[in-house]
Length: 119
Image (cartoon, rainbow, N blue to C red):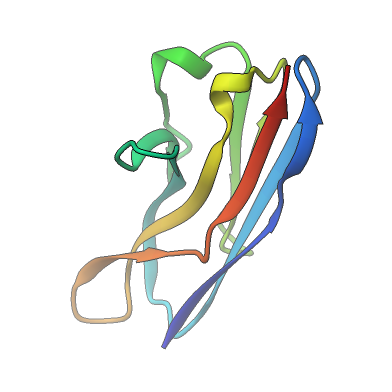
């Protein structure tokens, strides 16, 4: 059984910063990549950033230069440092991991955490 547990998030004024963390635990054989999605009210869940086990990163254009994703392979953790936050960053943020428990790879999700940016 695999669990992704998130921490961080909350309420911040525009221009402020928040940090999200996520830790994967359980019977994990290998993690290919971890990352963050977000879902705003009335919108579909969308990728924010991801990082591979080799350290390659991808960001959605709207957060480039403001958000930084980092990971620790030894601890199976991923963090998202969010700076210069804007009201449009308001959403529920979900951690995800594409990992193998020994036989095949699949997506696993965290519980979600609210990020609210006030103007």
